[in-house]
Image (cartoon, rainbow, N blue to C red; front, side, top):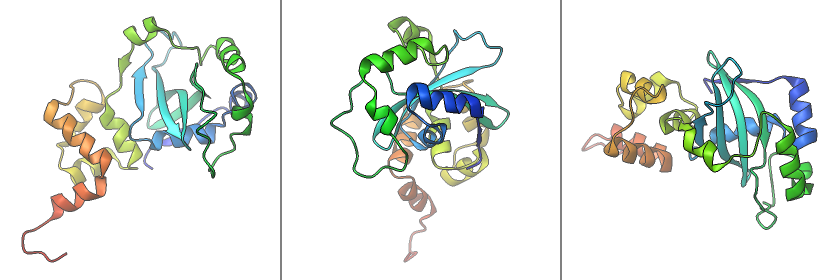
Length: 200
């Protein structure tokens, strides 16, 4: 994956104790092509703070992070509040979810309230937040650089960069194309490489 991840080890340990989520699991959330990201414009930290909701091992996570050059710095990861996934526990998971699963909704809420980086979201929060373009989430999930994504799916590199940096938004046909890529990127790649008469 082109993007690298980093975090503060002390913060990661604190996050595990408080929220029951390891930052290694939060890192895997960036592989979810259907994640939702937004800019948290209300954070006064001196750097651009972002938030994301994504699935890992059939669990929905809320993640706070920031970008430092090409590195993703994970700041916090927790179970969204409120949520009850007691009936959707998968049989085989990649990560240890024992602490998270043991937490009650009251404990989840209390942990969120006590963590300035993982506050519960209100309707006012959603109203002021600007969603990050999906193209970036999709590209990261496919483990491609901007140049690789643009070449593979025949999207002008400048257009892709404009989408990812929020300078322009994909129009309706482009949004539909990105949705098809998210659904079956390999099929799209093969279709674009297809040459009539080729038996492959």
